[in-house]
Amino acid sequence: MKGLLKNKVAVGIILAIFVIGIVIAAVCINKNRNRAEDSGGKSVNLVIPDGESFDYQETETIKVGNYKKVEVLVEPDEEDIDLELSAVLDDKFKVIEGNKTIKKGDYAYVDYTASIAGVEVEDLQGDDVLLVVGKHAYMEAFEDALVGREVGQTYSVPLSFSKDYPDAALAGREVVYKVNIKAKFDDAYADKISKGKCKDVASYRKKIEKRLRKENMENLSELAWDALMEQGQVNKYPKQLIEEEVENLNMQYAGFAEISGISYEELMESLMMDEESVKDTAKDVVRDRMVAKTIAKWENFKLDDDTCRKYLIKLMEYEEDDDETLEHLYEDYEEDYGSRPKDDILVAMAKDYVSEHAVIK
Image (cartoon, rainbow, N blue to C red):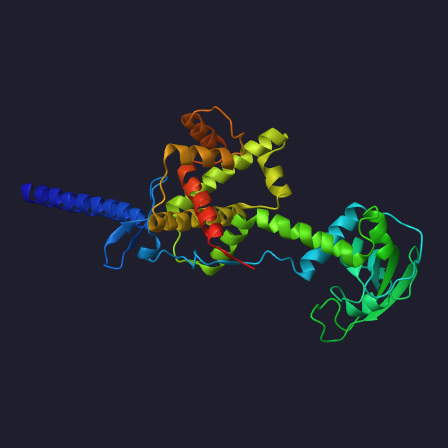
């Protein structure tokens, strides 16, 4: 009997040790999710305190691009100008008297519906659509069919799609479009809408080009950072940092929903976001911080009180002469923007550094 009891005790001790071993192993595994090995095989913690610089590239967690010579294109291309012109026309749409015949190069302002075998297809209709006739950014045959037509009229435009057309719903079908040409943008329109400052389309486009270039220069910091992000690579996202940022983002969305007088679910639906898109946003935030911490390490950024105050005021868009204490600025930031204010200061500093060294084209 004593021998049996001893055996049971021994088995119990063995089981207890086994269970403790599993628990310890689970804890270690969980911790190691946020760790990596450096080049020497040494385990490194990837969750770095707020505001502390760290070389993530050394751990092969990320790869930073050439942050001292990022090429930034500030000159708007033709497509940028077309899009901006379309937005301007959509906002200031008006019908003017004069030559109403559509020709190549005009901007035609149209509504259209489409039907297949007499049945109207909802997915093939458009309202307030601006087309550069003859540029064929839309459908070549559709645009060419507008040449010679009159503003203020509605036309039937039948189009036949080839059997190998990429859209299976249209391949081999004949679609009849009904197009209402509401207005056109030409030299006379440019003169009218600019109140005589631009006598033709070309000068109006030049005006837009100049404004877009100015806006790009004002936004150089973000453009340079985006260009750098396209060069780099993230090999590992620390799980704890992603979870932390998802929580921060959800807190911000919930706060905004409350201010807007709607539910969190209604806000997310209006933003066309779900759990996965929130996580993707969190990854972008964590990536930016990892890159910024790395640049901060390499360039020896210093977070003194004056620097932190300046950037916090800038990030929260406070008045420069705001007399809030630094402590209160941190509290305001953490309440409205997230739990890592110093990391976000490093991101802002890194963006300024990258833009200052950018190659502008």
